[in-house]
Structure formats: structure tokens, C-alpha cells
Image (cartoon, rainbow, N blue to C red; front, side, top):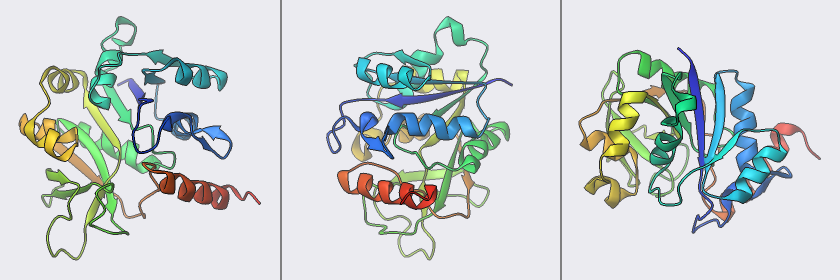
Amino acid sequence: MPVLVVIPARLGSTRLPHKPLQPLGGVPLIVRVAQRVLEYRIADRLVIATDAEAVIAAAEAAGLDARMTSTRHASGTDRVHELGSRGEFDRYDELVNVQGDTPFIPAAAVTGALAQLRKGFDLGTAAVPLDGDAEDPSRVKVVMTQEGRALYFSRAAIPHGADRVWRHLGVYAYTRDTLRRIAMAPPSPLEQSERLEQLRALELGLSIGVERLSEPAPPEIDTWEDLREAENHWTVTQGVT
């Protein structure tokens, strides 16, 4: 089935202003994320969905497809739904939301999210063993059943006392019908409390399959410190001196 990858990009981040346009290796972050995903040859089409003309300009300067969406969206899922609902994208049966602050997301996270969807879960996503501070609220944790069905996501350290804690990665795969169902529902109480959009799906009774990866967590970018660490990681992985 044809796969549409959408990278939502909101300019108004509070912890890291203009985050999609912050440079990583001299190139805007949102461009780095798109280039990474395109390298994997998973997407039949990739589109950046944004609320800012500056992001459109940066994407188009890099030869990428980018579209304007509403400034009123409360989550990336809502932005992906708006874009995917446009007639030109009707042929895509599976939609993948790759968060715009994940420039090092591994291919296995994207293919794994799709694999979970194709197993019959309503949504697919991915997680890696947490290798940092479990109390850090910017590192989202997930607990699962043995077969990989998500039970809960939290910014808190869960489960209590566990030898292994799983960190959620910023990728979701949906069918068109599932995406519509999530986007048409109002923000849920748990979603608002934790500030985690995936909890809306759980509160709707939808199943989320989690692909468990063995590799270390790749850097994600939420703060200025994260951006500095990502720049160091980029320098090392690209052999820049």
C-alpha cells in the first residue's frame, strides 16, 4: 500500500523558539529530518506540514515538498490529518507522522511503526531502552504488554522500580480511518494532563502497537541543550572536524 510520510512543523515552540529553523550541521532542523527519512526509501511521498511561511521557504529551498496548514492545531496528529484529508493525497492508505525534532530517527523506528500497523493494531509506533534519567519529563516513557500493546505513556518514570524503562520515539503510523477518528475527537483529559497526544488514542479505546528496538535512543531536540548535544552528535556521526 502507498505510504505518505508527513512531518508536522510548528514554529511557535516555547522551549526552543523557531525550532524547525534552528540549524543542525548548518541546515534547518526540519530539512535534516526530512532528508533522513527520504534516505530510507520508505515513503512513496513525503510532505512537511507547517503553520509558517518561513518553514515553507526553507523546505522548498532544499527541494522538499511543504504545505501550509492551520495555525490552530493543538497537536501534530491534527496537522497530519488536515494535510492527509486533501484530495491530492486520497491514494495513500497508510500515513506516517514523523515528528519534526527527530533528525536521527532510525529506519527501524519508521518501518517498525508500519509493521505494527500491519499486524492489526490501530496505530503503530516505536520505543528504545531509556539510557538517561527516567525522571526527565522531556523523555516520554511507555509501558506495554508482553506482545507490545501500549498500556500508557507518561512523562513520569514508569513503571516504578523496573530494571528496564522504555522511551517512546516520535513516530506514528495510522490508517486513514484511524487518523480521522483521532482528529475528530476533542483533546482528552489524560492528553491534556500529560501533554501527550497519543493518550487521546488510548482514551478512545484504540490499540497502539509498539516496535521495541534494541539500539540506544537517538537524540531528540526540545531545548537549547538538546540542540547543542545534537550538533555534537552530528559532528561525530558525519566525521566533521
